[in-house]
Amino acid sequence: MKSLIVYCSSHGTTSKAALLLRKELEGDVVVVNLNRTRLHSDIGLFDTVIIGGSIHAGNIQSKVRKFIKENSADLMTKNIGLFLCCMCEGREAEQQFESAFPHSLRDRAIANGFFGGEFLVSRMNFIEKQIVKRVGGVTEDTCRLNTQAIQDFAHVLNRRHIHAEASMYSFEPSCSRAMRLY
Ligand SMILES: Cc1cc2nc3c(=O)[nH]c(=O)nc-3n(C[C@H](O)[C@H](O)[C@H](O)COP(=O)(O)O)c2cc1C
Image 1 (cartoon, rainbow, N blue to C red):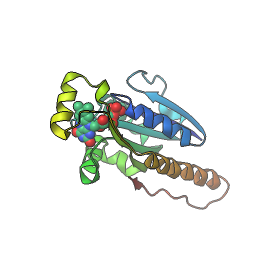
Image 2 (cartoon, rainbow, N blue to C red):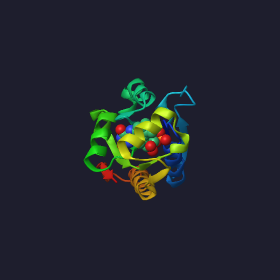
Image 3 (tube, helix red, strand yellow):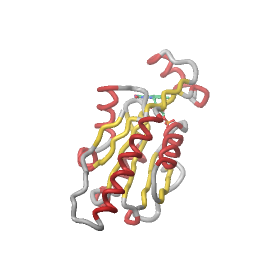
Image 4 (tube, rainbow, N blue to C red):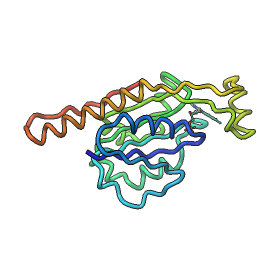
């Protein structure tokens, strides 16, 4: 099975999450940071496409939105995993997730991941420092990356692959219910 992870990261936390996820996934995994690399080939080579990004002032990166828009038809034929890095939790995080990913993609997703995040003050510019200080009272690096959520997300996708491979040899329907992971 071949998986593609595409993501954007502003200060490196989503990169960290994507690399941790790659370690957990079985099969061949290609990781593409949309900030650095333009995806030249289409996504037809992959069985699974995992899309991730982080939230800044309520929004996911525009390059993630653009990737989804440009590949919307092909994405509807893939196993999909969606994940976010952000510091909000609970209902607020869910609302951000809903506005980051279109309804059609969320409906198709096998795994939805809320991976937490980090405030890396040391990498922020002056304005970002002012924002996180004013909004959250944050003045130093803070890590709330949820490695367990990353492992759980990978587990769901790995299980889906096992089901898919098994169904090549039998006619049993495979499970495709989406799971929400925190
Ligand atoms: C200027 C700024 C604005 C942010 N706005 C939000 C926000 O609206 N909601 C949220 O949940 N997290 C917010 N965050 C937290 C980021 O989502 C978090 O730092 C994340 O780990 C960033 O990941 P990245 O380094 O991969 O971009 C904000 C962080 C910064 C620096």
